Length: 299
Image (cartoon, rainbow, N blue to C red; front, side):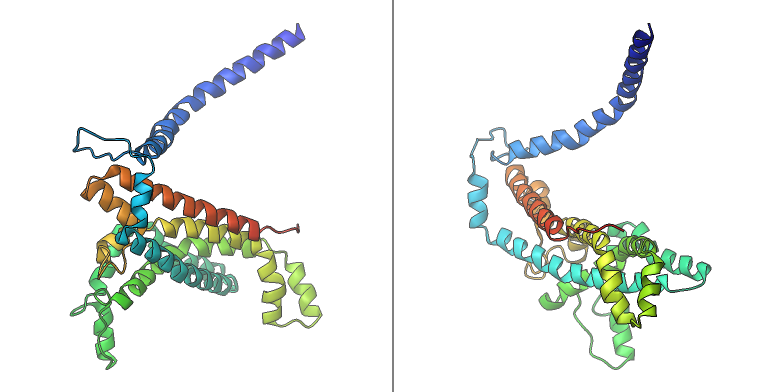
């Protein structure tokens, strides 16, 4: 009798969980799984929504990539952007997090944290528009400041060498808030007894940072690097709004190439195959970072 009552209670709980999770599972299947599966199917077809005939071409889209100069340029620009932005993001956010963490006043500490997090609340496309205005050659804020300082103006968005740097600057401004908060949480979790013991042994600030802060922040750092890499490989709004891939395709990245092929040229099959390549790149880099950042300690 007792076992039967227990069994009925388990059935009732399972039914409640199933009914509660059904809407979430349905939304996940419709808006996540179905588009992924559809994209995987499309990359083997020469599919266009404007064309009634969509022939199966197998790996034809991937063979086309090897001879597509625009794709190869976008591929290189994507890595160039990530390699420029990731180190800058990590150094800047870690330095700011340590600096804010040392502020004694709780009010000022929370104020600084809020100020640096504010840009992340704004839509990335809106921030890109504001930065485009500030970086204009003739009447932009940056060139006005350089003019007041007696320095020559810079073609921030029309110079192939400066355009990528300008987008990196905008991305760092818009994105560092998340990583500052994560690093500050990691710093707060390090027991103070380690610092106190090291100071008793005569350790300086650099030695405290090198032998305590950095090792004990390794898990936080791996998380930050992985999440930032995934985010930066998919960056799109600022590239479209600020330069639209120019000048001379110097800021054309894979996300912009996917968008143009899918919605400007209506070549959905080729766009799906480029998206699959981007997925493989992100997956490979994430697995390598997890492997390299694995730690063997606990505290």
